[in-house]
Length: 484
Ligand code: BG6
Image (tube, rainbow, N blue to C red; front, side, top):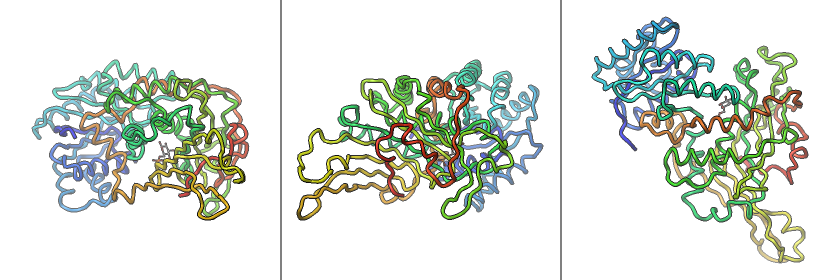
């Protein structure tokens, strides 16, 4: 771990939900659990006219809700938390710069700054420009810019945003958040693949029959339907989270565990994916149903959703990676809201043995294939299924699991935001999305987003999406799911 240098952490959108719910508790966890308390100072910025004391109270409350109380919390809020209102305009950013310099001088800070944009995407360009124009894109120490998702709305807007950012900040200063990359189990995909030789020789078209990635949620839009209506599942989940999982599971080994080596390999995989055939994409939107025995309303029942909304809340698709390793191996992605339960799983199914030597064992060779199921949440772990001989005769083959459970092996898994915030403080870009990566991902899905007349099929809340999915995608058998 690199030492965390003293800095000022400036949050734009300081009075928003993300700040209270995620950022402040995660920052405090980093301070206390990762021992960087002396280095950290927080300046909240937003349009609301509240005072330092008002923001300190909000910070205290956010920490209280996250289970942190006591004199250390009070003391940190009192001595190291500040607030500045910047309603708009350039003068406000000049005032902001003066305030930052004042705080730095009062606390003896060296001028290292993190600007975290916890803002709606529409506000990114103007804040970035005003930071640049006020001379805040560089400072006496290092300056880092953290951008929350969504990064662009399609390829054109993502490119525009990248160009805009690069007119003020260098790529080395930019940290684009995809919180899935902060999840320990997602990072562990790299360890699983590249610290163990066991699977490498089998991780290719000769041995693998298919790859499935499922990111299922049982929740609906939870008060965010206004945002979701303009987003839908492709932008909300697939372009970012599922694509990150796909690139980590399919990438080549990087030369080193370094940000640009890893990100370079991820881009290569994305660029090798063939244009997605629209006939192999199935969209759905949930209608009323039930989950865990409880009735659940439909997506269009939400007052913020248009009566005739065609926004997909579910998508499943089949895609192909045209490279030496994966040519001919189908990759199936699916994600949706209001599915039976929350789970993120990757299943890699291996081919059958070339010849079945177990004559007389009814259908056994056809039935079982080796499968590696990686569960990223909840109940994080792996399961590898393989055939064993059942005791006694006649000969019977049974598919049995070999398990690894994260919880059993490690008591505590850090929260994704805690990991990412610490990385920003340390200046490690490995878990952040590079500009070419974000563009390669949008390049893949933008043709789908631009397609007119897409068919969005209804599915009852609590089901696994529209009935036609498996047939349309040419899935052989059923989706592999590890029980959770
Ligand atoms: C967010 C999406 O990026 O990820 C949400 O905007 C979604 O719609 C969430 O619910 C899922 O994250 P997690 O960590 O709960 O799987």
